[in-house]
Length: 592
Picture 1 (cartoon, one colour):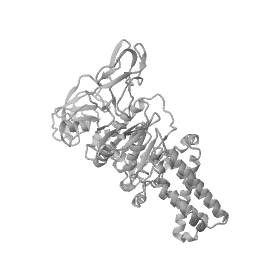
Picture 2 (cartoon, helix red, strand yellow):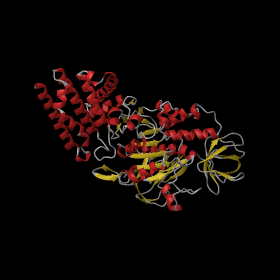
Picture 3 (tube, rainbow, N blue to C red):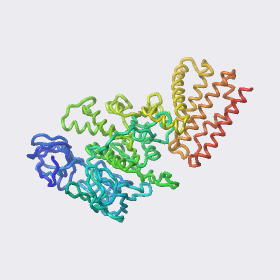
Picture 4 (cartoon, rainbow, N blue to C red):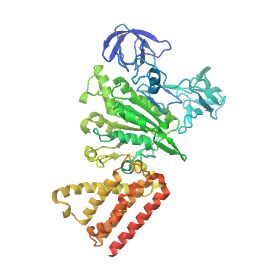
């Protein structure tokens, strides 16, 4: 329906399980939000045409009868944006679950309950910026800031993107609620009042003037990802993998340890205990900012729409999450959004499409699945919003329509291998399948800060590729038939796989690996490989080298046990001593 200030009344004409068909005289266009009277069952127009429109509810429609009234709000599904978003858990349509629990005193969401997403009673200390009365202001301009918490100490207050004019009044420094007027502007003789809160439709990307190319890495703390398959801040990443391969653990590790200012974690159609785990773990985990430790929950917003929640709300939850991420991006924050999992979102899309009687495509998914995925992922970009989407193909089949459509869109592919997961090799990243198209983009950053990094990364990739070819030869003729250089390749690749690529996310020493530690581990292990090859070429057998350097090999395997909290200077000093000892040992082996 065309937006209007006055709500319009209609009546239910037919009821069909998940959606209802109201009867009215007005032609409609687009998806519009509606509120079911009495129970206030929030819904949207799924299809508009003629005198009958299909309306789907975000909640169960049990009890709705023919003739029940429908109230049209005349606006699309929108979210509230403003101070108070952090440390909050919402459902797919931005209902605050903690507030609902306090109101209802129940572990279930009562039917038809509505409550504001942001606390209307809480006061915030508003600090006006440099703008003053008489200045011109346009959409997206910052006219103040609010202290939200110790991690987000400068929540910037922005003018609504669709507004502009001349400031006629701006509030003084003081305490205000999000409904108090803090700004008044005038444009073409009309005055508008603005509060610290704004509303934005979830399916409409927040406007940008230009899309910039990203050039700074999204550091995950996982060695295999940061070293071999890096992502950028503002990039798009997919994590496909079968059940039990560790998709959720990687997503949670990114939320805990990535170099992002804000985290938007969307649990879309997955198990409820995963969101419960996040709620229990995040307040206990801390991040060091400006020399002090803070709980990472202070920079996190959760959108929980688990598998037992309505399908329509699951489809909306992804858009709710990305809209929240764009809001913080507009403040200049680096935001990482985790979508776990986009396969469940696509299944919700398939069910809605089936209810509407649309022509199905591959495996029953709608023909516009690829376009919907692309419109979601293209909302990432420098500024920045980084999207990491977990994909759950049935049986780990990467030819699944959702997986194949996702891989044609994203720039980074972290493929999880079920065989590695069964061998308890975590993260179970398959290095031969995974790829990153941001490698060349980030070379400038690494050349400036870590000059040896690009060459070491390329050499490790080549070493792992060579070892896979040699594994096939070993299966046919045995390892004893290989030459000494090939034996070195196999043994060093085994060292890299077991002690560099593997990482114990539940240990204090290995739950997070900074870039400098990753670099020194790469440098030491590839240094051992180079010196071994040189020694073999000088006539020393690999068996003798391996026996003489057994202590060095043990120290190389123990590099991962250094705890980053000890400080970069202390740990790098130990690594340098190890590297020098290794060079001296190889010199003595060659002399003998």
